[in-house]
Amino acid sequence: MDLTMGLRLSHEILSLETAHPFGIARGTQSLYRVVWVRLTDGDGMEGWGEADPSAFYGETADTIVAALGRLAPVLAECDPYDLEGTEAKVMASLKVNAAARVAISAALHDLVGKRLGVPLWKLWGLDPAKAPVSSFTIGIDAPEVIRAKVREAAEYPVLKIKVGTADDQAILAAVRSETDKPIRVDANCGWTAKRAIAALPMLKEYGVELIEQPLPPDDLEGMALVRRASEIPVIADESCRTAADIPRLAGVVDGINIKLAKCGSLREALRMIAVARAHHLLVMVGCMIESSLGITAAAHFTPLLDIVDLDGAALLKQDPFAGATIAGGRVALPTGPGLGVTRR
Ligand code: MG
Image (cartoon, rainbow, N blue to C red; front, top):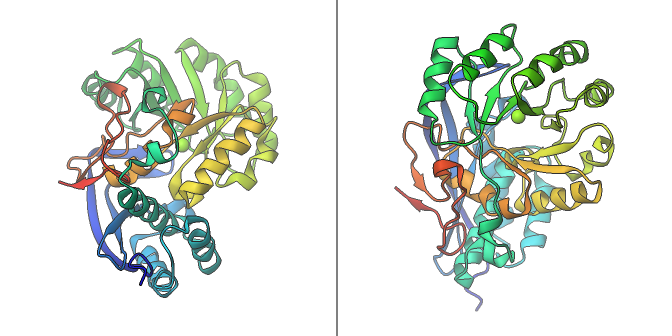
């Protein structure tokens, strides 16, 4: 009898709290409910994954739990080594709920890595030393709070600044009053093309090296106008969920931001990297506010990328898991088998 066959799904809702209330163009929040997913094979071995719901895509911890309920009978029939087949079955039974699907995907990859006794990056043939430095995010806040956050983030060599407000210049001035390190901005769809283009000289003056998602997701015409006017590379985040979104973004932006909570699968993330490369686009990975369990799943493919923003767990007051870290901005991948994540 094959003891690996058949996977039992269990889950637990965890509450994460950020060290500071985290503000982006769409709102401010400090408490996040995420779902810890465990798949146990017939042999009693466990694979872990994390589902981090995105309100922007209509997901909550409760929609994830409901989605997991629909997947449990599907997984009970699956062979964990059949990663392609199992992910296809998961996709067929759950087209939306990318955050729920990626928790399963991460748990499957964790389980296979553990059974084979190798870390996921090694299974993928990657060199952890090739991972780019991770940025650390400064959320929207009052200038004096921003200055304090920049001082607290002294160990990180690159900062990502959330903008898309009426006070973007004051935000950048506050950052620059504290540091001259490289900065990137993320407007989270908060600008119009006209406003973004008008802001370009100011962004250049403050030494911004990258602009993430200046406009709403569907305004690709506007994004192309901004990109044409900009010397600073423009990256699509909300405009790019899966590999299928990438061909129409070629010529519109300079790069794409992959997030597991958007694309729903580690294998889809690898497909996105391949498709983006075929279109000569920069490739970035981002994250949600998530624990080290979720962050580590994305960290394993960072050696393939140009830009890394995996600070979700570093922004937390307390992290329930230990895995990949970004101390000093350096992405350190675990050496344990699978994801290499442990419970604290
Ligand atoms: Mg973003």
